[in-house]
Length: 468
Ligand SMILES: Nc1ncnc2c1ncn2[C@@H]1O[C@H](COP(=O)(O)OP(=O)(O)OP(=O)(O)O)[C@@H](O)[C@H]1O
Ligand SMILES: [Mg+2]
View 1 (cartoon, rainbow, N blue to C red):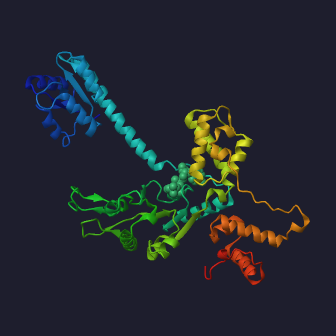
View 2: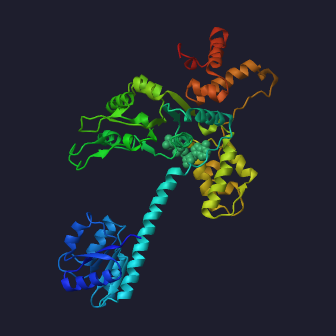
View 3: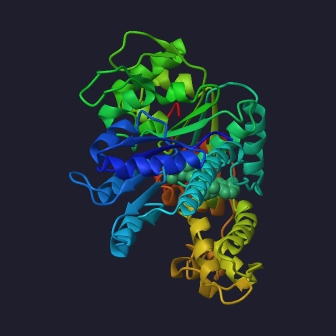
């Protein structure tokens, strides 16, 4: 095993040298340093495994030294040595992050023992960190539930495009699973095992986004003391996921387009291009075609990223997913919270199925987590669900046809119901077609029929505009 390399800090040279000798006879190497301030300067450069410090020193004292190490180099254990067996001071040192303490005169065996323990601890910490990183890299994303035919089609597409390097645009309302799909794409591609770097374009201040993505040269701006790689380069060999791309400022969109075309980025303040090898995925909950029409999104960039488009419908339009997901979430959260919940009562499931889930899968997930945490029985009951879910009243569609003269034809029923749906979706024809389970052209044909001979009660504002 590698020899332990220690630093001893004490403003009394003889005291420091005693510890140094004791450490050497325990098989370690040790440097000494006569002030806390100096040791702080030295440590970032030197590779010490452990630091011993006297507590009372002139200038910066041992306590402050512990604090600084705990803040800046938490991996390096600090052992405090107290003179007059002042336990109070030792306890205080432990509180601010010292690993252990020894009292003077220092017992050689105890010193050897404490050193060994601290060094083992440091090694374990480093190993755990490494393992965590490795696990984070290989851990597959939470498994994706696909009960509806829509989601199965999406998964099918995922498998087909995962193996290519094509840029994929994932669209859908908030909480529909865009990020999960992006991770799944990465995991099912040859790039798995390489980094998956996700960046939320909406969360980065506009003036930082360029350097975040492309990196910056040393001195590019006031805070840039060192050159830094951007995320394009960090995702090397892996996948870069540009989340909320619809929020990207126009000026940045132009630079992004250029980078995608050249397959190279130019760090801020540098005139050198760095090629990158990352697969690009993007997601948005905005309707980019509208954004383009209103000149908030560049059309050329859209075509660059939308090589393949994966559209995630809202959860209310894929009822087939709901029971399966709910059951999967029950299992997951029962395990996580150590609860003995195994399923969902028929009444609770009924409520879950009725509800329209405006927050999509994320809302369902939160709702089940809360329910599992509250559950008093081994099956969730309606009482475990939030009131909004438990007492949701779907809008009713009632045909008043109890008198024979009110009876209507199927065509009339179709007409009324279609108008009703159009109203509910604020005139959005793609949505209406989805709700009705027909394609858009069929919907237009219905409107055409209406225009030609239909009743004048047709909601004229809902008529399709030509060419859409
Ligand atoms: N098909 C699915 N199966 C299982 N879990 C899912 C599925 N889709 C989404 N989830 C879960 O729902 C939550 C929300 O998903 P995700 O964060 O991917 O949504 P999003 O579309 O990126 O949302 P936002 O637009 O708000 O960022 C996550 O915890 C995710 O694991
Ligand atoms: Mg997201």
